[in-house]
Image 1: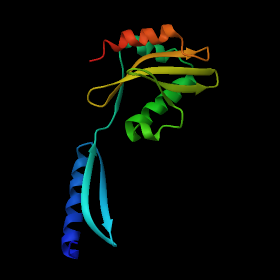
Image 2 (image 1 turned 45 degrees about the vertical axis):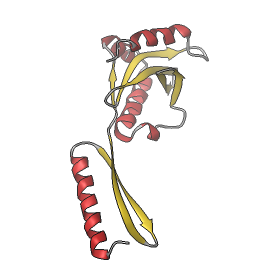
Image 3 (image 1 turned 45 degrees about the horizontal axis):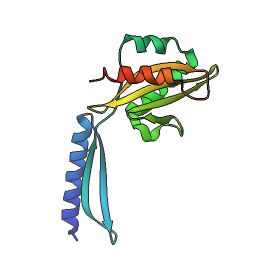
Image 4 (image 1 turned 90 degrees about the vertical axis):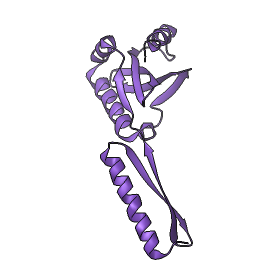
Amino acid sequence: MLPVKSEARALGLALTNAANCMARGSRCALRLGKETGHYRSFAITTVMRWTVETLNPVVDAEIEMLPKDMRARLVRLVNIIEQAWFEALPFNSVKHLDEKLWELRIRGRDGISRAIYVTAAHSRVVILRVFVKKTQKTPPRELELARQRAKEVR
């Protein structure tokens, strides 16, 4: 067990490191190990932030064609991913489709829509296809189009 002065010094150093980490724009977590009422170990975990982007102007046009309320919902989900990670998304907002393809589920007054995406290098989410869903199951042609577009992601 560390003496009180050493514990305070170690905690101060850990907090300084966490502040420096956050100043660089990374998300940091300070973890304290507690045993018998005293803090014994400190660890700083650095996690990269996710960035969300669209593949190309065609996908931008698909987003623009969504009804206004669904577009607003998509923007809200993207903001949650970028600011608070996937874990903060509402329950059932994300579903794994196959291999690298995932979908963001978007509900609105006019129905439901989907944004199919892949995760890429450097903590990026790349939206490949956005469409209004008219059937219970995702149409195979939408999945095939998303697979073709996924090949363009670098």
